[in-house]
Image (cartoon, rainbow over all chains, first blue to last red; front, side):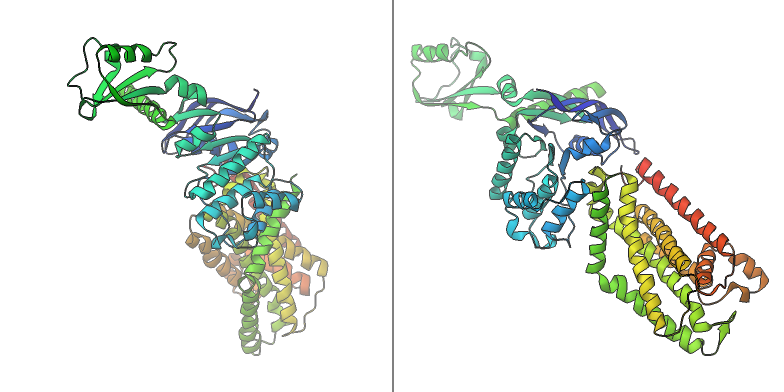
Length: 317
Length: 253
C-alpha cells in the first residue's frame, strides 16, 4: 500500500536542550488506522505537532500526500484534520459556528449539508446552537472531532480522542472512526486505552524516549510477541512439577499446586500441547478443567517499553 | 491566497465585537463623551480657540486618535492573545494559512472595529461642537492607515505578551501617555521651545498632527512628514510580524 505520510530522519530538540524526538523514520500507509503507542513523554504529541505544523522540527522532513510540510504547507495541511489532546475550544462560540469557522479556515466553501452530517454523526446536532462552554467534557471532545472533520480531511490525527469520554460516547466515536476509514480516510491515533488500539488499529507503532522502537501489523505483532498459555486446573494438587514431564522448563505451578501453567510459542508449528497432555495422562495427573490465555496488546506494549528502558539504562551505565 | 481563511478569521473577530459591544463600542464612546464634557465644555469655556479653531472642535481629531490608537492596539492584541491563552491557536497554526493571511484576518478585523469606533466618535462629537473636515479623503486615509498600523502593533503585543498584565501594559503605560503628551488637547506650538523639540520624538505627535490637518489645515508638522512617519511605523510593524511567523516566535515551540 502506498504511504500517505512519509517521515524521514525527523528530530526535535527544544530550546531547553531536551530532545523529544531522535531520528524518526516512519511511513503511514494510505487508508490504514495506525496506532501510535507510548508512555507519557515518549514524543507522540511532539511528532503529531510537527506533522500538523504546530511545532518546528529540528532536522528531517515530512511529506503528506507527497507534499512537503514546509515548502508545500498549504497542500499538506489541507489534507490533515487534527483532534488535539487538550480540550481547547472557543467557550463563547456556538457548536455550529465553531465547526463552520474551521471549514472556512481550511479554505473550503460553505457546505451546511456536510457540517450537518458531521454533527449528526457525532450526536451533536441537537447541541448545534449551544455555546461550547455549556457542554460536558465528552461533548467538547466531539466538537473538536467535528472541527477536524469539517474540511473533509484525508488524514485524521486523533491525539488521545477518548480521554475523559464515557463508554457510550467512546463507542459512538469509534464507529465514526470506522466509517471514516471505510471512506478512505487515513487515521493516526494515540491512546492510553490500549484495548482500543488492539480493537481498532491495522498497524501499531511503539514510541519510547523519542524513538520508534517497533512498527508492525497488529495481527503480526500479536502473533510474534504474544504468548499463549494453557492453564490446567488439577484435581489433586502437585507438590512439584514431575521431573520427566514434557516441557518442564515452560511449566509453572500455582494456586497451591492445583494450577499448572504451560507457556508456548504461537508461531511454532508444534506447540507441544498434545505431548504435554499425553504425559499428564501417562503420569495419571487428572484435570478438573483447562483454559487458554493469550497476552494482550497492553502486556506486549509494557514488555516492549520496559525492554527499551532497560536497554537505554544499560547503555548509559 | 486562502481568502476564505482570512474571511473566517475576520468574521470570527467581528462576531466577538458584537458579543462584547458594550466593551468594544459603547464604553469608548461614553469615555470620549466625558472628555468632551470635561475638556470641551468645562475647560474649553476658558480657552476660546487654538490657532483660530474653537477649542471644542480642535480636540476632536486628538480624541478620535486617542481612542483609535488604544482600541486598535487592544483589539488586535486581545484577538491573537486569547487563542494563545486558551490553546485554540493550534487550529490556526495547523491550517493551510500563511502568516500574511492570519495577520490580515486579525488586523483587518481590529482595524475595522477601530475605524467604526472613530467614525462613531466623530458623529458623537458633532452633537457637542460644529466640525469642518477640509480634506475628508485624507481624514479617512489617516484614519485607516493609523488603525491598520496600530492594529499590527497590537498584534505583535498579543504574540509577545505572556499574560494579561503584559497585554495591558503597553496600551496603558505607553500609548495612552504618549497620546496625551502628543497634542490631543493642545498644539505642541504652545509648549516651550525645548519641550517642542522633545515632543518631536513622540511618534503620536505626527499621527495627531496629520489627522488634525485633514480637518482644519492646521498642523504641528507638515502632513507629508506625518504620513511618512506613519508609513515607517507601518513598515516596521509589518517586518516584525513577518519575522514572528518566519521564526515561530512565541507561537511555535
